[in-house]
Image 1: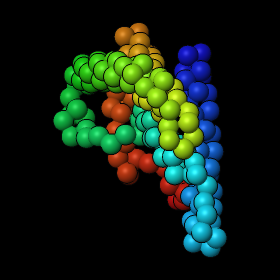
Image 2: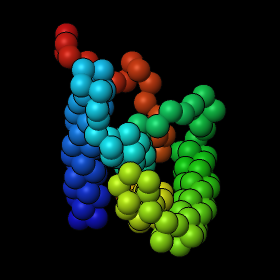
Image 3: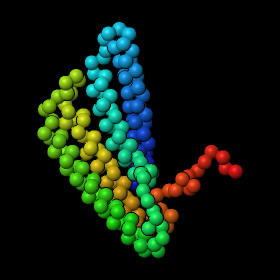
Image 4: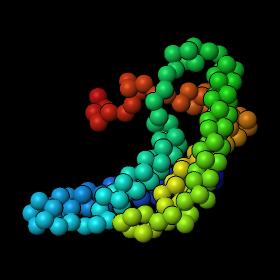
Length: 177
């Protein structure tokens, strides 16, 4: 049930990322055409595009973590016995949880400091609409990591899930033959 909730949230984040990317393309393209063709432009285009890019990056990090899509190396861990793989996974996830905690702390401090600061073009709260992206990433990533640690502790992780890295040969291709 928790996995379905996490996967559903990640699908929603993916939709938000697609919309953000489409909006960025439209804003930047329109702004370029207006600047070179009509010597005008959209005042908020650059700022909003930059903010959308930051949100896309942080949401994408959560989605990639859930899908085990981040880069990694399994040269040592793949040679370990199952107990060694479990230990390495637990240590790695605990270290990543600590990083999530640091990201959450730093993001929340930036949100507090910049709550009343408004952006130049959009006049929106920099703390709420910009720095909160780090907090969302930290919480989302933390939930994914805690769920995987729970599955590890309860013995529900299969052996092939103990290594989060997939070699390019292991990836599905378009041609099954």
